[in-house]
Image 1 (cartoon, one colour):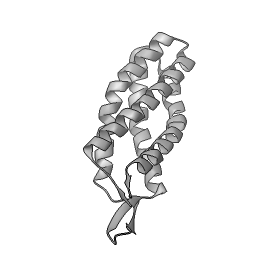
Image 2 (spheres, helix red, strand yellow; image 1 turned 60 degrees about the horizontal axis):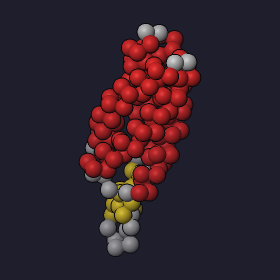
Image 3 (cartoon, helix red, strand yellow; image 1 turned 90 degrees about the vertical axis):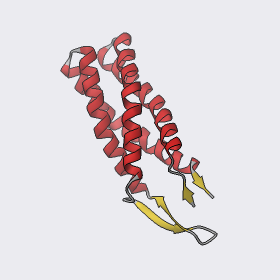
Image 4 (spheres, helix red, strand yellow; image 1 turned 180 degrees about the vertical axis):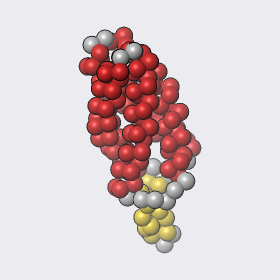
Length: 145
């Protein structure tokens, strides 16, 4: 089975992930600040910065074969497909980038280091779980049979 790795897919993955990620960020920001206005502001800024950062992250991962396995299609063509470990590695690398972005934005909006770090570090857990399932869903959606 062949997986489609195009710029269009990278963009669509970025948009769908950002919807999920922004909702999670807004919820966590509200939880730790108690302020809906600040939570929406943090989520709104992130919406812009993270779509751009995620697109770059996807394109960078598209340049490497790390974590791919070679399979043979029914027609005898050899193709590379993502292993579960690749999805995990992508999740970890994205979470590092995303956490730094979240902490900076949350601090900019709240002026409070404590809230910024609480939001950012809680996201490490919520977003890695959400990202893994998002990545596996897109792998299924882009698989050519």
